[in-house]
Length: 393
Image (cartoon, rainbow, N blue to C red; front, side, top):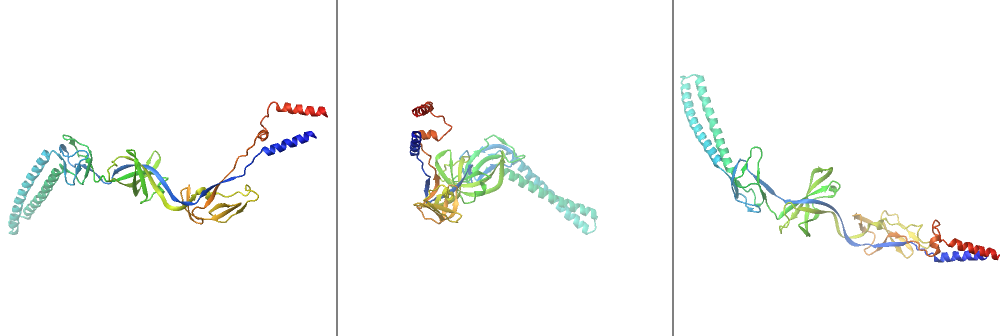
């Protein structure tokens, strides 16, 4: 009898030592905010308009009148090639033109004489036709000689290199005394940027993100040269041509980059952030609140649930009642979602259920795990108690 009373007492003590907590609920507030999604990439800064200035004739560079960073005007002479051979060629072509013009005058006079004799029947038709052919050939030779003179004049003009635009010299590829050859391609002598206050960024966008990028979207970017500055621009062009490198497909996106203070320099690497979605000052809520739903099996017996059949809903807890409100949602960036209608700003809604761990003390901690061995002396003590009880009986 005493043994039964002892075991009952121990059980009551263990129950009294156990402390269990019910579920708690995380809440969030519906409030005004901004929702945005972004695409990040890297790009290169370059001038909007740049021209590579070359030469169409071969020769030795005689004079260079500009250097790196020189400001130039359209039509300004920036270099000259040696003109000795070109002047000689022009003189030769002009002399040849004079010669064929003299031959033309002779053939013309001869043709007119032969025509007069042919009209009087004094020469054969063959002689007349021969005189006419010589006259026509002389005319053609004069035309060819004039074209040769014009080409020689043009080549001489090409020896004087002028700037095609107003701008700044970015690069200079030749020095005085250097020979340039234009046999197969036009060699580049200078690169001139038109306006360094109007730059652009050519960004490489991954194929997974290019579908979200559109013209007119806002862009921010930074460069390592000015890590504390944030520059802004706008997407001006999404190019259709794909580039594949190491099995990675990217598309070029052109971004405007105003450069009034001339901090941005051609060739700098830009870390680009494109805002593919922006909605400011709209009603927002944490997206996980729209996924929350109370579990009827886990709530207390005196708590009730008032659901609704709406596709999107938010839950509030009013006393011991869980009540759902149907809402209409807008855009989402995964973390925050726009609430178009259904609830007002400042409403506190349920976002998640948190389960508190069971706290146990004393012997109940060991009792909760039957596979944990008890203290070494515990069995001995129990055996001694049982033995004593049996002896007394």
